[in-house]
Amino acid sequence: MTLSTPSAAREVASAPKHRPPRKRRRWLLGLEPIFEGGWLHKGKRAGRWDVEGELSAVALFGDVTIDLSQTRSVPSEIAIDAWAIFRDVDVTVPKGTHVELSGGGLRGHLTNETPPVPEERRDRVVRIHGHTLLCDVTVRIAE
Image 1 (tube, rainbow, N blue to C red):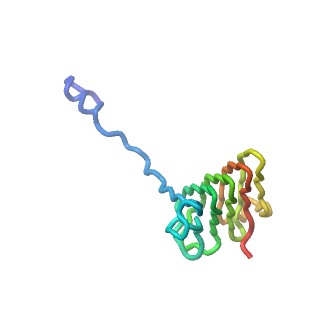
Image 2: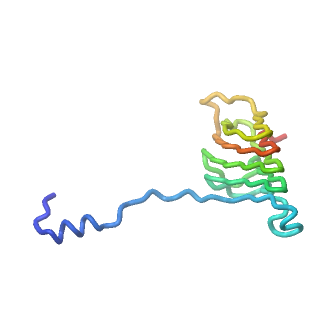
Image 3: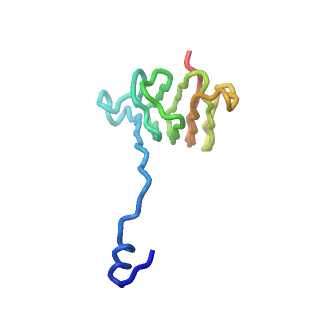
């Protein structure tokens, strides 16, 4: 393609660039003493729900529970940022889910109680990056 005039070159340079669509992120907050009895009280997401590709869980004085075992729709890969600050973040996954747990913290634990799943038998992958301060991020298989 040849641009014969300077104005044509400016038009091409100023054309909007294509951006890949952003993944939707859902925030789950456990703020019990702050919002006691309010909408953010339990920080729990369970039952039949549509899961976004990215989740952020912040357990600040209230536990956060993420149950991925009975979801309506779920992407093949989910990224969870889990912050356990004075309370716990618990994640429950269905059988056949491969879980990758990474991160660290201060006087807390990152615990993956799920068995490894061979690559050819994986239904989905959940990648959790956990941060702890005196509490735990735990992942287990749904019963």
